[in-house]
Image 1 (tube, one colour):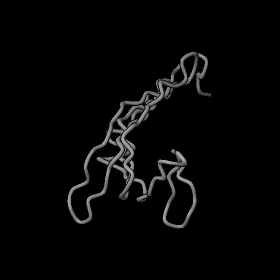
Image 2 (cartoon, helix red, strand yellow):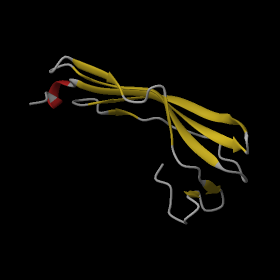
Image 3 (cartoon, rainbow, N blue to C red):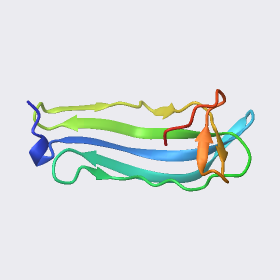
Image 4 (cartoon, rainbow, N blue to C red):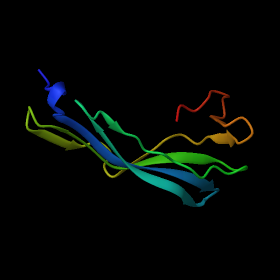
Length: 106
């Protein structure tokens, strides 16, 4: 059984918000390291800024790894990188939406 009370499971990585540039390379708008742990300090939240009033965006996860000290297990989850589907943001509504109209759960 996992030792949640002592913070024995850790999820680490970097999260970035991107502006898509058509067929060009996406631009990084903001990045943050995140550290999610079990136990007394469960989350150091990542905060992303940098929405634009136009264009298509995505979120990129880099160097995502999970470690469980009880089972002496560690693995790369995103090797090397994961991307979310593209979405558009409505800065007036402070919401982002996928092309099918569903809200992006950021």
